[in-house]
Amino acid sequence: MIIAGDIGGTKTRLALVDPGRGPRDFVAEQEYHSGDYPDLQPIVEKFLAATRGAATSACFDVAGPVIGGRAQLTNLPWRLDEQRLAAGLGLKRVSLLNDLQAIAHAVPHLQRAETAEINAGAPVANAPIAVLAPGTGLGEAFLVWGGKGYIACSSEGGHADFAPANADQAGLLAFAAERFGHVAWERVCAGSGLPNIYDYLRSRDPGAEPAAFRAMLDAAADRTPLIVEAALSDPAGNPLAAATLRMMIDIWGAEGGNLVLKVLATGGLYLAGGMPPRLVPQLQDGAFMRAFTAKGRFGDLLRAVPIHVIMVNAALLGAAIYGLEQAAND
Image (cartoon, rainbow, N blue to C red):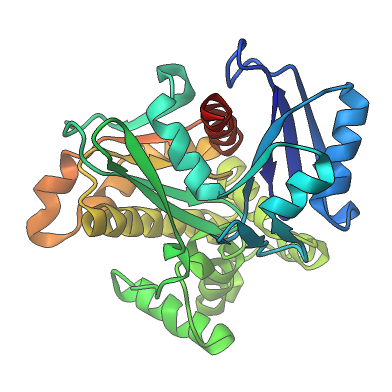
């Protein structure tokens, strides 16, 4: 058996995978709070002890770049090394993947019930595929055809320069630049960046914010869930929250179109991460597609691109699939 893991700054999800049962029917699965541990190895040891599992190899996806079999996690003080983990855990092989690379690796294996359609489009066979994943941060990846199958490629495009698409977004750029200097896409269209949009809109119309909601935000350690919930449950009573969510979805559409054009992803765009699955109705109402296709002469090309939301934990699924493939080649 193999161990598959989705290693994030907040949570670590581990699964025990039997090749005979495949990458979805886990023998065991557990979730741990990453910050409670000094490294990944103690979590894996605890998982194996609790499940009485035995494994010969492992594949972990991590939130951060993987270079030469080593990874420094973006939001954890962990430095992971494939060889050190393999030796410490007594495994034949440990593979580290960037989390977006793992999601991309899962894309060709997704089943119809594991996605929600935003645009049917007309996919071009064997063409590149793009992945945009707004969660706590903004992840980006893409797939290219390798002759016998797709090859998943990681990216740090979420940290590239934010480019406003209209006057309102230009104001947001100026507002965020005063706070951060460099304004990456992640600053304005991920969970961690959502409050920046809210603060910008509030700075233009402070009277639109209900006093009770302001008090809730001031007391919250993480304002993002409150803003999203207010936008979804009471948009009339929380107009700034509703406008924040609308602007964020517009920015998703714009950057999704940018990513598709950059890699000519006429095979499709997949939205992953923690936020899109909760916002499928808002993504289907037309605003996302208007921003996605607002690329001048390339609007028609973009209207033909299929767009889907991934509704499952594709990072863990991708790690399981990759781990099984590696084990089969041992």
